[in-house]
Image 1: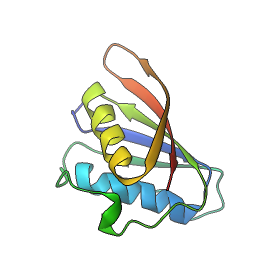
Image 2: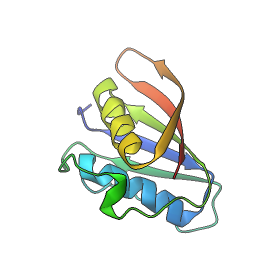
Image 3: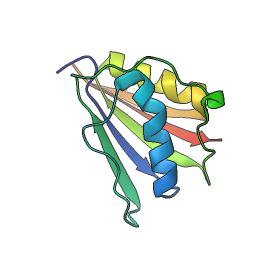
Length: 115
């Protein structure tokens, strides 16, 4: 597994909120392999692969749109990828850490994001 492979699961908010969260991660991970759907899903998912690296930038002042409501985000991947994702999201949104679970080679962290 690459150090940048990451799966992001989002619940709460709408498709625009999901796009805003994924956009905040693109600065760190590059474009996702899979984007959240535009449907009326209650849970959306995006995946970032190991081949593209982003610039590592991204702050709330970069023009990211505010979230319409709190969004629960679960990031899963290598410990390094999860740390980088948590840091990137915390730069753009107000993030409340809801806990983490660690395995041998993967980690999962849940955050609640607000504007």
